Image (tube, rainbow, N blue to C red; front, side, top):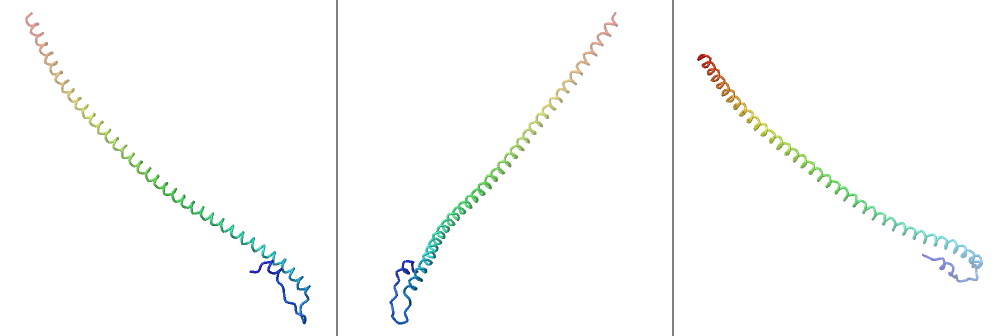
Length: 150
C-alpha cells in the first residue's frame, strides 16, 4: 500500500510534446496526497481500534469462560451440599424413628413389669384377705365359745 509520503515524492518524467501541465499535476498530487493521508490515517486508526476491540472481546471471552466455569462449580457444589443435607436429614429421621421405637419398647416393658407387679399385689391382697377372713372367723368362734361358757 502506498503511503502519503510515496505519493508526495512521486516524480514524473517530463515530456515536451503533449505533456501534462506540471502545475496542474502537482496541485492534483497535493490534493490527492491530503485525501490519501487522511484516508491512510483513518485506516491506521481503524486498524488500531479493531485490534483494541479484538483484545477487549478476547478479554471478555476469557471472563465469560471463567464465569461459566465458576457457575458450573457453584452448581456442582450446590448439588453436593443438597445431596449431603438430604442424606443427613434421612439419617436424622431414621435415628429419631429408632429412638422412638426404643422408647416405645422401653415403655412397653415398663408397662408389662408394672402389670406383673399389680398382679402380684392382687394375689398378695387375696392371700391377705383370706388370712384376715380366717382370723376373723376364728375370733368369732372364740367369742362364741366364750359366750357359751358363761
